[in-house]
Length: 479
Image (cartoon, rainbow, N blue to C red; front, side):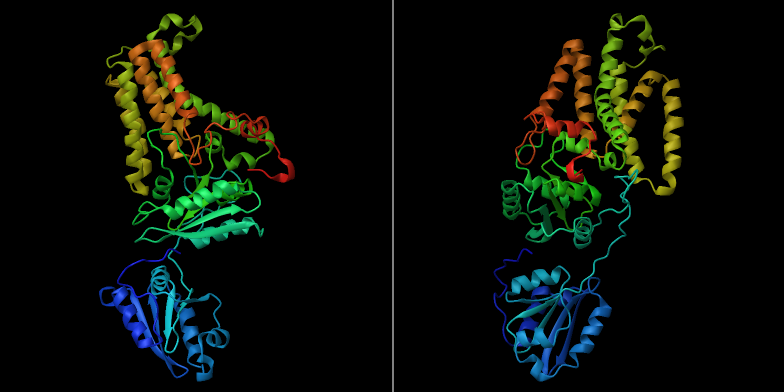
């Protein structure tokens, strides 16, 4: 855990329990905080003071410990080592020699204890955090496979990962970030598979972060770790709320970063193929998994290119063969198609925001109203043509074919730029837009500086086959 470096905090503890208790009460401002509890008792003829945070402490465990402490004799408290050996039945207990470390542990939910004659503080990790159940994530839905998901408690997330990888090479290093929040950050990797240079680089970057708090948890950490400009919209990291995806990434030699209070984990390094790939591809036979993966790739391309390509073709109907004339607009166009598509792009985002902020009981009626009433009357009133509504509906459905929010909005931004260039410069603009999208993807860099389109550049035939097709790997080491 990260320690507190505050000038007005005394470095060492006194051997007097009264002095340590008074100092602790002053530092934690006990009079101004209703949820901070203290208990002063006599154990083995010596005064002891305990400090708890209500809501973090397991009351039944503390009650059992207190009953045991009352039975101690003076010889059990001759020194701190003797006390830990004979007078402390609990396993998760540590000695703390610095007051700053004691404050950090205390505000993390650990119970701290001062005993007269001991120049150390004892920390009893019998905390518990408010948490929800490890149910299936609402965004990362599972077709077949485990239906548990990460939650906001770091210890429980580590247990979900450890449950899947029962290997001594699995390492979960804990660090602290934020001078005020002191958020716990865990770096998870396989010791015998991870890229040591990448691992050292990530740990140095985390340790070098100087912020007050990770306000938005995993996203705040991502912005602190990635030092380059964020003008490129394509995601630099892969996020997942599924323990099976995280475990597979770790077994592949990747690094998984967890942040306390965040149900999502960050996977690095990440290429565009990693972001589009999903664990469900491996929950089915290779043929079905390959079909699902290729379908996802094709839908990603369709989502980005469908409406700009359609706009180009209806602006140049002479290019269309007779059998494709049905794609042109059949009714009268009152609003230019280009503006129709831009308005529909904005409207879809408006519906998304409305769905997020609508109570669950009303979300279905809202969808019905938006889909039937708004859509029907928008066409009949002349604002939109039926063809524009159709193609934007296909684009909206295609956006949800992959789980990454960041990738969905990156494709949306690229689609709008391509639409604008096509409307302004016709075929030349369309070609320029395609080249711009290709350059944006190719020249994007991951946090590690690696190629975003690996294994295309640098070319790796074996890895490319694995990314495009769902193949069975040697030793069952599949992602």
